[in-house]
Length: 193
View 1 (cartoon, helix red, strand yellow):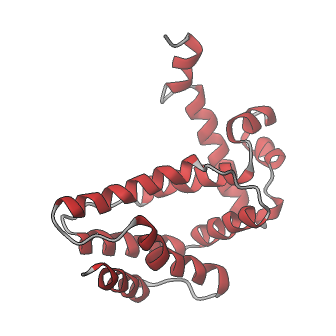
View 2 (view 1 turned 90 degrees about the horizontal axis):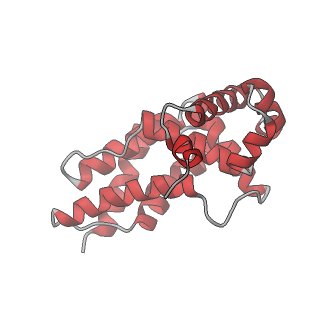
């Protein structure tokens, strides 16, 4: 049986939600205002008004916090689509990913995330990213249930997302609608027997 502390931790509108919201807001603001390497837990604590030890206890690493911020943003602004067909789902998903990645905030998040990976702050298990992976796998599973040839999640990541993220990281030319449609076509050709 859970304790009162456990139930308070799970309340969606309780202190935990307020802390998460304040820390996410501070993180987003700081990432837009300055280079990612200057965005630290102490800076986030000062901006958010959340005690530093609370931030460390909840997120442990900057990569863990960045994952949480990005996944929450994606779930709110870019839910995994369900259009009734794999092509429709993938196209809607890729178009939205291209749109988000072409915004200043999207670019900052990708570069900050890549920096935390390069700094080896990553954990073996990144729960926030696993949530997004599960949602994408659900999209692919729905296609299989409809009898459509379906790529693997790794294929989706390698053929659709990796080129768009690479473009953000390596060029000044963000992904656009034409690129989104092209990578979806490529993925569907690979998935067709």
